[in-house]
Length: 115
Image 1: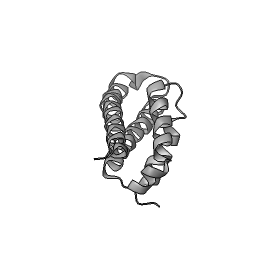
Image 2: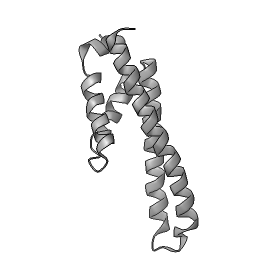
Image 3: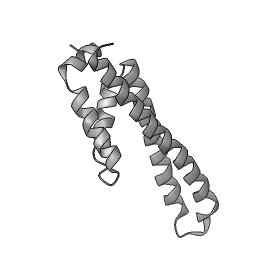
């Protein structure tokens, strides 16, 4: 296993961890919004935002799996660009920027068989 493969493995582990934490917490939040916040002004908005976050967390977890398998390069790259937009969550933004930096290196594109 060369250095680039190790870096991609570590990157995929971080994606899977953050995606898994997001999935677990947002499933919990969906149940909370359904039961506790049903009397709030706009419970539909709470559920829509929670579903968007859940879908994003699932995509983040899938990106970790794809990076480990070295497949779907553009899916992981586009998701990393979207991750870097979330400046409210610094670990997610930093992971997105690092992922973009690592995936755009020519030596990693060779691992994905793009060049």
